[in-house]
Length: 166
Image (cartoon, rainbow, N blue to C red; front, side, top):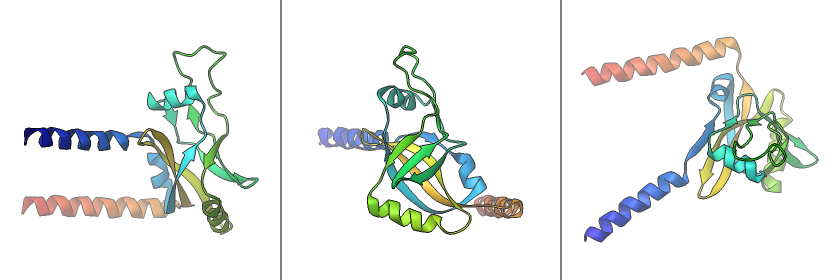
């Protein structure tokens, strides 16, 4: 019986590690209304993988484009790996190819034709041993929309705290 408990705990711990969040674009959910999300793979170099696992990725100014039928990730800064020499290190702001099925790319292309929509990287996470990027199809928020969203969140927070006091 004691063996089952250890195995269950180890399996739960392994699952948690398998879904580890490596980088998050918190600003994106504030500036954009996310309509749809898609999990894609990223074509990375070895030093980029090591740098991302060390938490050296910045998604804040990133965006995605569809060029020549391929999804591309632009303006995402992945710092150089400290242990690698300058010769073997990668370029921090290079354009990276995203890996998605043709049907998914075509669906996104159709949705992007709608005025005001853009593709934004939301987070980089581990799925098993693979590094995945979640991108979101977003519509830019106006200033009054941002204020309204802040007010709604504050009201929900106040309501939860009032319910806790009861």
